Figure 1: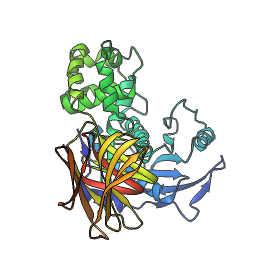
Figure 2: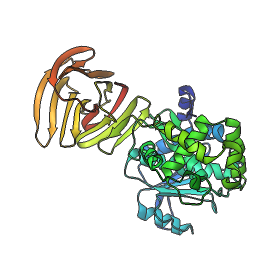
Figure 3: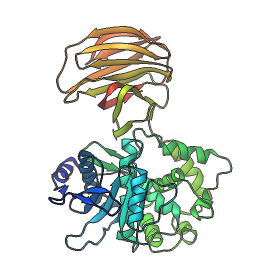
Length: 423
């Protein structure tokens, strides 16, 4: 199941009042933290991060709400003027301080936490933009799920409790539209690959996960829930969820709805081979924005995101930023971070092919008409031993390069890439 909110509805959500609570917008908490609060229709978000990101996260939470109502078939019951509270802190230390101030135990090895005792979510900034937003969605989903369906008590089976939010929190967000339950265009976590690796193991104990006779990992939890939602009978899935949300365990209910786990295991194993993320980040700060769209950031160097397998062509619309210098295009060869080649254009219309890594060289260069808005469409396509290069469907040159993965790339900027095509 792929949940998304239509563009027109998303635009309505973007217009919702998301503003600091009042004149005294920075409130001093007992731990000495100055938190600014942003209220929207369903949420009260307290943060000590920058205002622009806080407002974006508030929009994400509101965009998420109707999608969760659709998935769970219910929503938390809120009193008049009541909002669900989420705290987003800038560091692990301040996260610990806020938890301690509120009398909440500090969970070991976690980056976020929903505490049923006060119905609040607590989390802190993660290493990448995508991971931070994904964790926000993840923890807010626990809050929503517990309050809407579980009488604020966690289900018994961890694969279900975590699997549901891991499945849904794999998302695309382009600033306007939120999609949940997707196969990400690319991600550092790469749950599909990790889940497939587990199912590939000859002694993989799938049944033990379902019966909670062993501890289970997030990728396999994600895989099971995604399969049951995407490929299972919706009525049987709803019936099983009702049992698990009501406090019963999967050991006594799973077979009734989905049969013998040992027979289900090979079907999920084969299905996982069709569920892999198409692109792999070479460096960290990449995030999918759609099935064929992504955004990358590299403040001081090159960054790339490549196809999972060797490719013969790649084409992409490089969206022109509103301001600032930029440079981006397609990755036409990749062996390693020490040996790659990029075909890029910049804000002045200058293009070049650079072989980078341990040594640097420019094998081709030229100039096209500069643009102030819109996009350039860059393409690299194999022709025998060469790669043909084109900009806006006009061939500008060729370079000789071995066959390899291809992809998208940028240098010293933040860029969005659209209509990514590869084969």
